Image 1 (cartoon, helix red, strand yellow):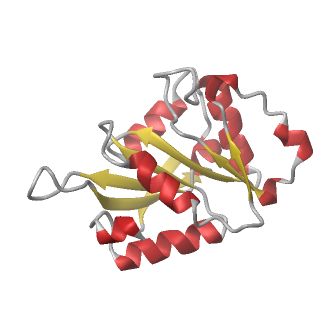
Image 2 (image 1 turned 90 degrees about the vertical axis):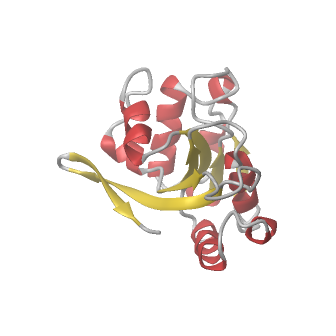
Length: 178
């Protein structure tokens, strides 16, 4: 994987993420700033989807969700370029909540989001206009955070943390995976 060669993630992380994608797990790639490699990493991992999985590119606020009646949740991956209110082509509001529900119902979700922490992800999705419940937010699966390079600012951002969100009676718990 080119991202491994570039130092974005090590062999152990690359293998674990590849295996998670192939097992049908959902994930979102997160980092605060733009242009640090969120979409690049999400797209590289989406290439690891099994050939039997149908790729559905969710069209942000333009999404009609016509595919829901036509396809089995277990055989589809919902690919979202960004969960945010920044542009109409991005997923936000009721469309974001519906997509999270579909992921929770057995679909696979691969997306990006602007956030520096698990708490920021939860905050963005729990407040209106998304208004997602803890179960819906937990459907994100793993959150792969990119962090800045430790030395040379010209080096690529690297996978700095991977967490899993779990719905609990008290809300959301965060479990560090790597």
